[in-house]
Structures are given as C-alpha cells and as structure tokens.
Length: 393
Image (cartoon, rainbow, N blue to C red; front, side, top):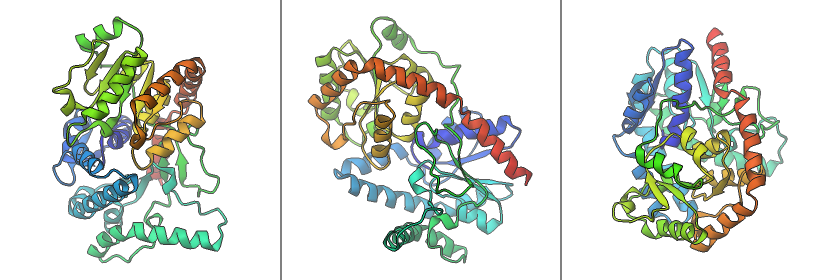
C-alpha cells in the first residue's frame, strides 16, 4: 500500500520473480491497476478505490506539524489495513508463498491460511535489534511503543480468533525479511537476526521510454537542468502556488534551468519562464541522468534513484522517514544539507543551489562512485535467489 514510490519496488520484484518462472500476483490500491498491469504483472485490487496520492496530500496540507501529520497518516493506514482484510484473505487463498509488504498487510491472513511468508522492510528502523543488549528502561520503552503499533493489527487478528501479539515482529517471517536497500546508503545492523537480509536496491532500466518533443528540445538547448521531483509531496489537495513560486524565484535568481514534476493543480494557471519545463511521470532511469542535480523529498524511491543514477541531491524532507533519508544522503557525501519543508524559503533554496555549485565537482564524483557500488550489488538477483531457497525448503 502507499504512493507510487512505495509500490514501485514491489513491481520490480514481481517482474524479476516472473522472469524466474514464478506466477506472481501483486495486490495494491485500485488506482495502481494500470501502472502494475502495464509492467506485465497480474494485478488484484485491494482496499478502497481512492486516489492515494491525493489522499496523502490532503492529510499533509491539513497538518502543519510533522508529528501531527505522522499520526494522521498512521491512522489513515491502519483504517485501510483493517478494512481490507477480507479482500486480502481472498487474494491469498491457494498461494504457495505470501510476500508481506512493509505495512504488514497479509501477515495475519497468511497465518490463518497456513501459507509461508517472506517479509519486505523499507525502513530499517522497523527491524528489531534483538541481539543488542539493552538497559531495562530502553526495553520497557521499546515494548510500550511496539504494543501500541500492534493494536490495530490485533483488531484484524481478533476477527480470525488469533491471539494478540505484543509487537509486529512476532508476525514477521522467521525465514526471510528482504531489505531492498543498499549497504552503501544504510549500514546493516550487527544486532539483526540472520533472517534480515539487506539485498541492495530493487530497480530496472526503462529502455522503451522516449522523451516527447518538448522535453527533448528543452534538454538539447541549454545546460543540464535542476530536477524538482517532490514525488507525492507535490500532489496537491489544493493549489500550492506560494510553495511553487519559492522554487521558481530561486531558479530565476540563480539562473538555473529546471524541470518540474508535480504541482499539477497550480500549473494549470501558472506561466513558467522559458528556462523551465513542467513534465508528467518520467522514468527516473531517464530523467535523473539528464539532470544537474535533483531537489527531492527523500522518499524511499527518489533517494534510491538519486544513488542508482548518480545525481547529487538537494533534500527537502517533509514527513516520517524522509528526514532520516536526507541526513543519510548528506552523510555519504551525496547531498548538501537538507531544507525542512516547514522551513522552506526562497533564500534557503538559493543558498542550497549556490552551495551545490561550489561543491559540485566533489558531489558529482561521489555519486558517480556510489552509483557503481550500488549497481554492483544486484539487489533483485539476490532477492530472487533468497526466495528460491525459501521455495526449495
């Protein structure tokens, strides 16, 4: 479940498993039917027929404080988890293996049906460090947080007359938990149990994509542009002209050409300078290679893509794990210091662009090096190999 950036990794895995000879079904929001089926993967709709990215933007726009936004987001997720269980149960029937997504959907249903599971975790903070010695107070606090997180899932378990769990790691597979993250981005914890396997990023090259005339002409007639790609954070429940204008003015002040994704509602009545171009969905494998740097929200997908395709980052984190991802990109030398979305100003954007210019040679050299390291991990191949072992067992 989630926005395109959340769903895309599972599409890559489904394609790789299909190529390996498996019959794969991917369950997700009805709004992703076209995206998934165009990738050649069998699709089953799960949950309400809503525009998930618009729903997420509405939650974000109603909450100025990141903690409030996080709590509202979690409540929204938990409602979908609980209400979708009957559809998940039906979709799981007759399957040989259930790959449980990072939201833990299908773990309970697979348990009821007696079907083995493999987990996927996109946020390493969610993996328990059971091999780590902790002080009594740390243990108590950890148990409290874990029990609160388990509450909505226990409501689903109650429906099937299953006993309550005290934490979600009790329902995770003890066979395999795939972590589709590069160890060059996040180091694996020495305190994880052996089933937690960091594989490297999941991605594929979109070799069929060809730019339209307007994009091809724009790229050919000038210096490499900044890519403004805030992902689901630029999907609008209402016009965000002030936010977009801050970026536009900063690009003009610094004399920067730019390609802008998102802000569709605002751009309907917004005239861009000739040095900027608004575009729709474009594969990162194409677009990021054409950019000078990328300004992004540090979601899982864009953070991974910036490293895979070797483009320096100006992070603008908004919520949840985006702040941690931003700091990680800075730590490994792939980004300038982040601008929190709540602190976004024209001057801060200008300063970030100027800092990127002054340190660009170093940043570009580093992301080029990281790109080669990340690709050498072959995350999808390793994941399929691990799943083959589970299926063999």
